[in-house]
Image 1 (cartoon, rainbow, N blue to C red):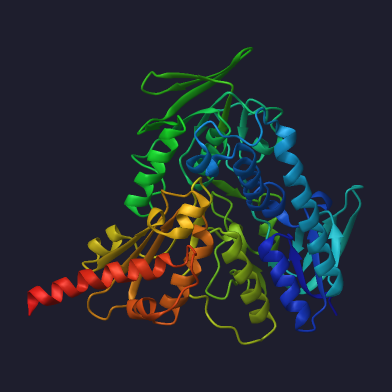
Image 2 (cartoon, rainbow, N blue to C red; image 1 turned 60 degrees about the vertical axis):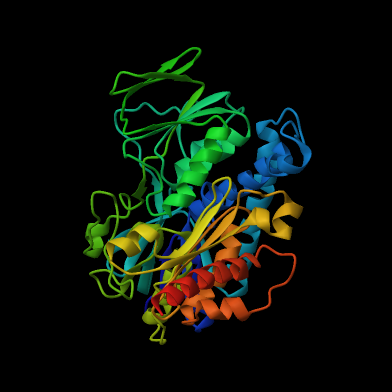
Length: 467
């Protein structure tokens, strides 16, 4: 008889939810993770610390209040790294306590160390002391996550040339910084450091940034970041990064040289599978360290599952949690619904971006007709109260059946607001529901009614001319 019904390698969002779900179903469950990484990358170097840092930046710089109190307004004049990390350490500490408590309450055994396969049902636990012990399980869930990908040509030192994990350990706020990569992580940190007053240069080999987002939203973000003195170098590739006593010099293939105090690489992420000895379990990972799974999150070995960032796209904490729960239910023979394909995306730039459904470009490419309804925060009483005159909500509406095809939000609370649109879309609702609904006043949620009225007025004009 194996030691456990389920053994989970990794305690991030996916692994934690898989373990809890199996435990709630009465199974004997164990989780293996490094003692300093309970909660995974999400809690320690990813989602939670970066979003907490963003809150600290917004609060201390007073950036969001400047429309009300003037462009020179700041809550604190000289913001130090200690000011920023105090809040982060507090939140991370509390979150780790919550996770430990959840595992303990549900009688999940937590083993401190790293795991690697001995055979398809056996994992060797390497403890901090170096001692190894064997753990056997009927089902195994791989939820090891990812680490930042590091180009071999760059000498990272973690202080002046760093990746997104090291950036949280900066000794001081850099006066200038080069960020290589205009993906989600790169743009979130570009926003934060620009808000702190750092002179930021973003280098991206593609022609644009965040190409999964609405074009109008991206144009708005670019405008905002340029207002904060961010320089964009699109269509450029880094040839070399030199470290000098007085800072760094980033040399582009076009010949441009960019001096800066620090350089941060945001060049994608690599699956943490190289030390798992996957071959002993009959498995293999691709060159990015990712594991292939089926619709139930089973690997090629049916009793071994993989969830979270280690299986690739969409690699979000929110989707990882749902994958973990679904994998555990399937392993335990419990019925589970398919994850809804309407997944909201949240990007915590300053201002934040969130969307669900398709973009205008995707609909145009698919030859799907649509009408647009827009609400601008500056026209809402709540927008005036909070001092956000730039935010907007956009609804993409089908003229045929009046359903919502996409919702795109930019500005304060975008990642919260998006769930209203997600719910209406998920339940097959129409734009008319939003027109007839009563929203609290004054709120940002009222933007749905304003945008819905805008869209229906446009649809009415088309109908009138067509009559």
